[in-house]
Length: 337
Image (cartoon, rainbow, N blue to C red; front, side, top):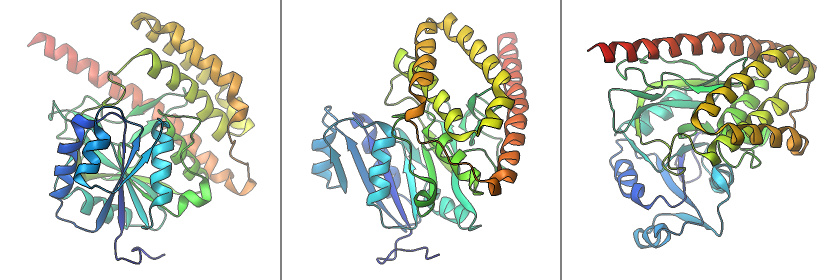
């Protein structure tokens, strides 16, 4: 497979933007400092009204201006389809990358032609001693989570397989989208990156974590907070879509009990935060509208991949329990100091 386009460029950095004017300048400044110049930038503006449009035009960054907010999925799909390079690197606007970030991401995805996506080492912007994301994981309870979140950023220095790359700062092999489909625009935002990497795994592709590609991430830069009514409802709905689309009937039956338990526990969690109704509304909407999703066709030859995925879901549950326990112990020690 050719790894450069006709102009000799390997990567298109696609940056979706929706009212993110305050983030754009530091994000772009970090990209300009890259030691590797083998990339081009493409911003997709999602109908911003905060002055982003004027700023982007005045700075003459290559930009596609959309008339309305199509969500994260809609924006990045436009960017991926418009790109001509063999790789696309999706980057949130509320990030600042280290100077060798793009070079390290290119090296990581070129290590094997079986890699679909590579997730970077995302560190919390305002607490650089803490991790934000070391690749996304999924569990048999139907819970997606950020590996390493809230733990020491001095760790997570080993390259490894992950369930999914976090699309906030990840590189993808563009041609694979033609095989497995693009980001699901029914998701709008949240869990769309888990969904696309899940589909890739069904087809036998791999997703990796690259610890040498470091990026600092504000987090919830567009939605404004870790938990809010919009985000809770949408994520709950998309969780239903994720399972319905990617699990064949036998796998849904096997996981029915743990997924139901996961829903009950999450409802209790969000009820305490004051978002119980929004969570249930999202689950109900997901169940009601699930058949509008493009369900992944089942092929018998993919059975080994389904079995491998099921094992990952089980292991992902134990990893979640371990990391959750470690975070609780950290909190106890902080209180004792």
